[in-house]
Length: 370
Image (cartoon, rainbow, N blue to C red; front, side, top):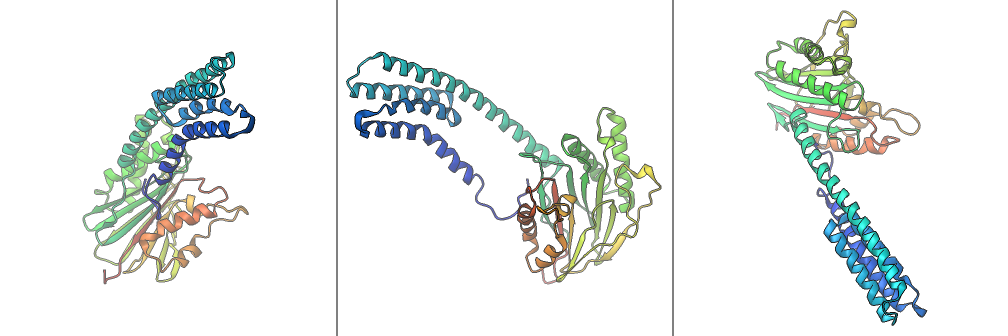
């Protein structure tokens, strides 16, 4: 998933936790022996040895878990001989308990390693799907910079119901940002259909209105092709953007989507849509004439496209996230840093963190000195 913000090297925290987990069984063995030997009257702390194979099952392989269990049995026998107990019935009972726990731990380790292998395979597939469905945006298309923030709300998910794409066509750059109604796999399916329609039509559509019509047609055709899918029952809000090469303007068409924010110097204002279209897949409910807005977009200007996962994030009092004031306060920040700033601020502002898919694209017309 596209990264947002400055972070520690990937996997640093995970490696630290993993190594500590692998060391715990040996810490149990060492601490148990030391405490057992130095405690007056030789209290029977060796009963704690049974924890070693149980902890090993969390991070070690089956063979290694069994080896740690056998080591615990050996340590238990040595402690018993150091007391002069020999092969007492209590020793045999303790060894049986450790052996039983070791056998159970080995089974747990086997189940865990199989689950981890399956999870790695599923994650690898998800990574491939993401690269196909939601490809990373190029940092620059033509004379325009693009900076992306994308976070799926579902735990461990790579893809959600928000979607985006930017394509260079002859004489312009076209961008789409959308948000499918609902969550889960159905929303992901609908998003992939709309992205496929956009990619198929983006080079051919004469303008943004024709491109919006192709999105509606693509979703309707998919519903006819796969009647069992609920993709044709979902709607999506979409904003389409066209950035022509020869003019310092930006053309926009909104299909029920939150209005992008246009930043000039330190000023921020939403793009005004006099007659926004209905969301995609709702056009049949009423007569729908697409109206394209054209606004100035000169050197140094920035355009923030975002989904409602940004604007509808609430704090503990229920107040919506103040996106315009935040963007105004970041006017002097480098454009490339805005996704990271927004991500961190949203996570800190939300009462429950980020509980919805979040997508935002910063489009920049660099100053002429660049």
